[in-house]
Length: 254
Image (cartoon, rainbow, N blue to C red):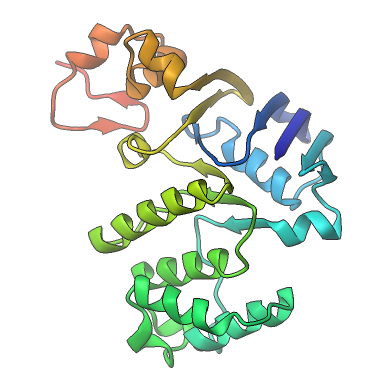
């Protein structure tokens, strides 16, 4: 369904992605992990068609920048890009017209209800809290019912109810045969429902593993992440204190 072949992206003298290749099947949830600067955002933006790059990306065997591919490819960015002078309802209507959606209003109402935005329909984009903006951001990404959906840090800013609803929505989309790629720093937020994990560092894919393969080796996703990105052994990760981790790695004992 989603095929990324030998994608390389340079920003002047910096190589953000270097010969990145992976393939995602229909009805699967793939998580894209990596430290800051690993190249996750670059490969996501390349797939969605925002960047020029070397290599090939295809959606259902169509070039990702072709009109047909764009109609079946969805994107929920990390930072909502809302129009300050459009209401919540007008945002959904604007997107529906852009995609030429028909009979979308019932689904739009369902999304607003699911993410507790029904009473905010007449609020303007700049009147919403950050959490509500993220909820609307998610509704807009889901409205066209894309076959392939990219989500960039989708849990950030959401309350527990919205997180639970988003998890259920992701599981429902997978059961419908959709292909999902989720970029995140929060490993715990995807632990329950991922099928494949891609771990990036320094612009390359350092690990490409299914949940079944990982469990066969008796390793957790967190342990694999720190082994790949920092060279830590599983026992080092397990012995880390329980007072949290940083994006640079687990909190070390003094």
